[in-house]
Image 1 (cartoon, one colour):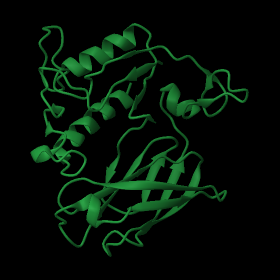
Image 2 (cartoon, rainbow, N blue to C red; image 1 turned 90 degrees about the horizontal axis):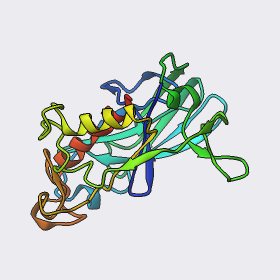
Image 3 (spheres, rainbow, N blue to C red; image 1 turned 90 degrees about the vertical axis):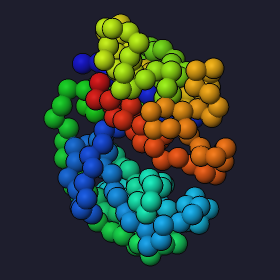
Length: 235
């Protein structure tokens, strides 16, 4: 079955969401768990006041991976991680807020049972000779895609469409590209045009509040992007 690899700001992100409140998880290999944490303070400048929230994940074979966390509005912070081998992983968080620091738990990773190639074979990487792309298990990956510069923004709406064939312009375009055989979808997070205005915006509002570029972040904009990525990752 086809699938999409989607990238933005020089990152390739492939995942599905599993929103779980507890600190212990069971997840299929290559899928993502979302760890939700509550800070002790509702900071006025979260990205300035909280010093580099992260979590270190250790596999049963002693693979160690550290992932950054992010602010998701109010006192809520999140860390996302996709285990790459089966078995029980441990994790421990680090931050300068006691509600975010030293949080520990277990992730039980089990084999993937679905039909999407990206989760059957693993994330994309360069081949051993750096001549082409493969999945994590070495099977070649054919990169064929389209760039939707405004794919994260209001020009390609998530909840409505200016095309009667689609109830969602975003979903309709993704489904159409999949029918055409595309394996990759690319977009620019901060694409701007006359319709979108400045800064970039979507149904969640502008990317930044009050003109505070890269300082006064609006979580609603990024939560809308989460919805789009979640749909992409299901294809």
